[in-house]
Image (tube, rainbow, N blue to C red; front, top):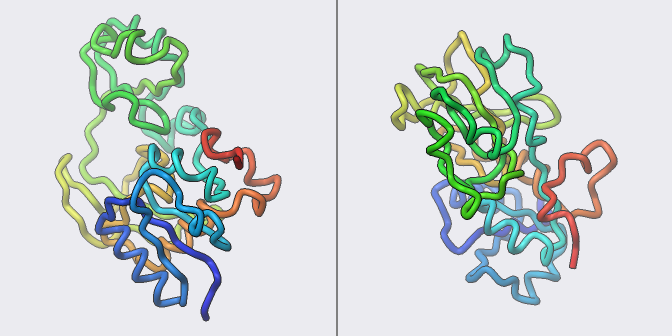
Length: 231
């Protein structure tokens, strides 16, 4: 059934962007590739916009498109029960993490302000000249995942999934596996779909990147702050 919604893409369209655009065309949606990091007036006036793009680009254009972007709370992973994560995960600041004197996996919760990896100790983390002392970080025990999977969730239900890595290397395949643990939460509007069903993944993207004024009270607490004000 045709819809008036428009899916916007960043200038560098990925394989997932192409797959989502094809899924959008199948349901009668319009798609637009934004040529620069500035939103043309004819795009700013689009009805029912959505977006598939990386976080930095999304932050640059979301307000001008009138978009709200949903993502997990920064401390979401650290609040999950141990039986779901299979390791100790702590939510703290980069200043506190710099005091670590043991190896740990350290990452920014919802962006890529510094590399997410195993650090021998906190001295290897970026200094205050690169990352503010109060910047939030997740610090976790070091574990090795035999295989990693991407799941797209819509209103608490898994609607499609795919394996994307084994032994730390890219290895895309349909969803299988058991003995699982949660790795992290990624925003649907910025996540690769790998072997996931593109139509189902598009449903999640359209829900997670939508007109700001259309979000109800249940969802507004999950709005990405950088994109939550319409200019």
